Length: 307
Image 1 (cartoon, helix red, strand yellow):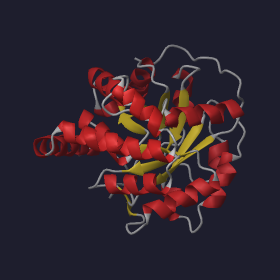
Image 2: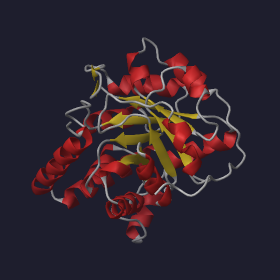
Image 3: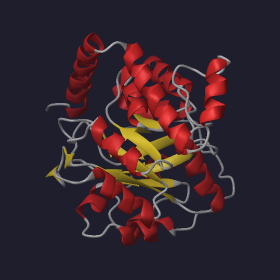
């Protein structure tokens, strides 16, 4: 049986190699810096940013202070509410066309108005129908919103491209990368003050993810090796292996408020895509899930992570 994840990894590595030959990294960094400048100007921080650049205090691609994606999820946890990461996507490997002609900016504005804490934008082109243009459109529509770039990321230039398009964070998949590759990509994201959502589906991969001590980790109920397979109980099986200070995100398979309520209390956030994209009006589902209470008290850590 074909391993779908391995297929996409090979495709994205080839894409990155072609892009690297066509566009120097310095041009990507300049685009990202220009994006940051525009954002800082809108936020009234252009003078502060300019002073930091002149003083040599900022990296090549500086952004607003801190990691906006992780910060908003931590704030929701502190407030005792579950966070909704609402996703914009056109296609699905398991379901085919979902909303091929969607206006990503309009969809994201609807999500934000309903109470989503962050927006996830698919940028993988072949199987999810996404692009960096979709992400940039969402950023233009929502200058202050935390935005996650969701792709099969295998090369650091993809992270710079995401930053140039306006992302605050990137998704990394534990099953797709070695520990060394994950550390390198996480560090690269952090140099841009970007957050990372490190996800896994398989128990051993989730143990690896937890051990890397990233601030946000996810349990993907969908098996990306065989996308038609989904296990909504996966978060219940694995949540105990997350550190108490880590933000835990349940991804895929959540289509109703009741399903969200049945998630372990340890889950801090849910990432929802298909159910929202298929809904005539996604606002009621977002609002209802965002109203679910979570205890803001520290949670006990589980036993040793799976090996």
